[in-house]
Length: 402
Image (cartoon, rainbow, N blue to C red; front, side, top):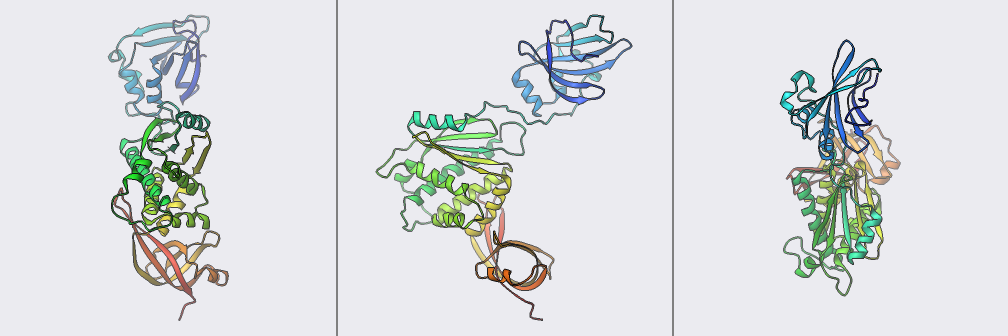
């Protein structure tokens, strides 16, 4: 049998996708030759025909239902336009019959998808972002650098994000540009961790939102500051950020890049990366220059998690008393200089970084063994959530003394 009506006022229909299937599509979407979309749900099987509901939906309503913004039940119960009941005879020689229901209240409850049932499909619900090549051309046309922040958060199947998350991200981005801008213009001199950033820096790192669009959550911001004798502080800061993010988070180059920032800028970088990582999705940070070049850093979820661990180690808020304990080391990565061990007294798992002084021992001492250890402990407080995180650095290991 056919699941699409034939020779009706709905016109020629083609299947888009099926959401429920049992001996054929039972709940699906389809589209007419003129672009009108419908949600269709099977009602019941009669002696000589099948009964269906066809709901015309706008493009925005279709995307909202598909992504879980509203339930199919609500879509049928509160339609944008009249719903059609279509009787399709199982004998193809007979004509399909169509009836119009003008109000959702006229639809019997037993005909509708179950109340509380939602689709949950990844859906673009905002205009797509322009590709990087076009962003570079836009930077050239506007004669200013543009900085792109793109995050694909796991908590939304739509190309939108909670206002608080995006608001925090924008605030952290501007703070990062300000602090890194001050760092690159310090030319190696000391910069205090507190106090107001000079106005001449703030005026040049100031930015404005150029676009907020889809293909995940994409925010393009542009410099509003003017160039000075040394060029654009905004561009220098954005390039430093993108270049650093593009590095291998376990490499010496990455560590050196973070250490070369002023402490204030390094902590701002840590806060920014931590917030992006909490959005739990891959991310892209990019810079488009006014000479139409485009440079990006791609950050997988795993890379973000590892980067947070590294910057927490490099930029702690406070050092605590070292741990002196007997530990059982069950994992060590000499490439990334990381370890994982169990405190034999408490059973607690401790993981972190291997200090330079302890690294040679890992070429001599075997794994899966107990050692006496001294482990440095650092505390980091998240500026957004006020959560406290600890990082560990293995300073020394020796064979058990008894």
